[in-house]
Amino acid sequence: MAPLDDSSADARTPALVFIGFMGVGKSKAALAAGRAGLEAIDADAELERRLGMPIAEFFEAAGEGEFRRREEELVTELLDRADGGALALGGGSVLSERVREALGRHVVVWLELGADEVWARVEGSKRPLAGDRERFAGLLAERTPIYESLADAIVPGRRDVVASALPALRALTGPASGARLVWATSASREYPAFVGRRLLGRYWPVDGDPFWVTDANLAPIFTDTLGGDPRTIVVGAGEASKSWAEAERVLRRLAELGVTRSDHLAALGGGVVGDLAGFCAATYQRGIDVVQVPTSLVAQVDSAYGGKTGVDLPQAKNYVGAYHQPAAVLTDPSTLATLPAPELAAGWVEVIKTALITGGALWDRVRAIETMHPSGLDDVIFACARAKLAIVAADERDAGRRQVLNLGHTVGHAIEAASGYRRYRHGEAVGLGLLAALRLSEASELRAEVRELLVRQRLPVGLAPEIELADVIAAIGRDKKLTAEGLGFVLCTAPGETAVGQRLDAGSVRAAVQELADDG
Image (cartoon, rainbow, N blue to C red; front, side, top):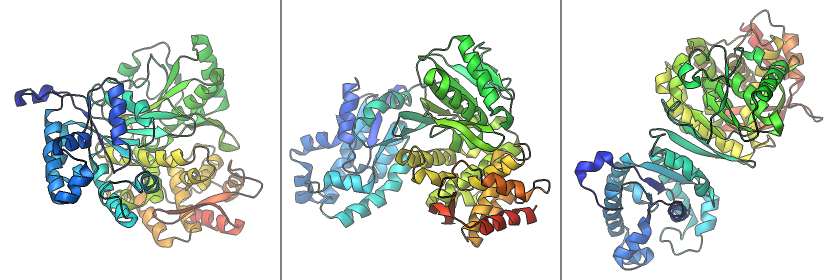
């Protein structure tokens, strides 16, 4: 990284700067970047060279204050002169305000790892601050919000993940500049999930040109993106298109177009398009890639991630489907400007659901929003995407933790089915399902607050009179999560405090749905 004259600062390429707690693998990330052809520097190694001794020895001899001063001096110098390349920083370097300011023009990659995994890596080492587990945990808790606030990209600090993620990370310094990234991991696949304004049309995350699947409402709006491509398949707008018949039509069209297993689909639309195109990608020739390009709020915060695909049957929602992780997700919040206000509001329900599951700062932020506007949702979308992907990483196929994402959906899906998928948007039905779930959770105060959040966005809080209570109860009994042991509900007693697989008596469930009918 050669020094440059300040006058050329605007022309310099941002560097990839790896940050994170001790032991997460920042030095190895720099090595991976070096093997990929980037000029890479490990700040700790450079600091030891300048100090003339190991960091642990200097830390003990001179104290933490002097060590931080010398570290700040070196790191700001490296950041100021960087022109591309990669740089790994020491875990505590971001405590410096000067360093945080110098990071502003670079792409900051936070290597994230759980406390137990990090401790297992550093226990017994000579690191100055790794001698006491309680202090170690306190430092991690103190620094995590700083890492999070600085991050343009979040990547798990696990072996070989950075090498896989490097092409996507490098795109953040070029055609995808200004976007943020979460590197998604699951048992079956890893992929980049980008969130950035005006990203669509400026960057494409996989090789080759896609075969587009979109709906009749969006096709005229995104003519520049689709470019009149004859390979675009247009389906009807709305839940009715998420059917076995429409899936067959799309699959037949793919065959007519000569799509091969080396090609990929692009699902441009909301949850219906994403589920349908994903299902077709999962089943066509036993599986081809799909890039999810969500344009609705419900898809941008939830359904585009995690690989659940499928179609509805008249008996129940999402009864036919497959797990098929995307090759990438390209979320462009500027596309939300195309949504009618009621559609945007319906998507807000999935934000509320995710905030209830996550709790903490996300819940506090969501509950404080009085007027929701698409121009101010980028950070919320990114936080929701990250929250969902963390859950999917731990449980790809709904064997345990992932079931928490069904909060409000058991009753919500039943309401959709009972109304023939015509009366409510998906988010509106899930909002009603959330109220039922919170009643079943015996969380009356939280239910009242969530009800108010729905009212703020002019969302329904009561069941329409034309929907029969018996039909909803019958649809609940056909829920796809039903097993020989019965139907397990997701309950939420407080933000961030949820339980899955809860068996409830029929009378309680009926009473919770009846309360919705009484509010209609």
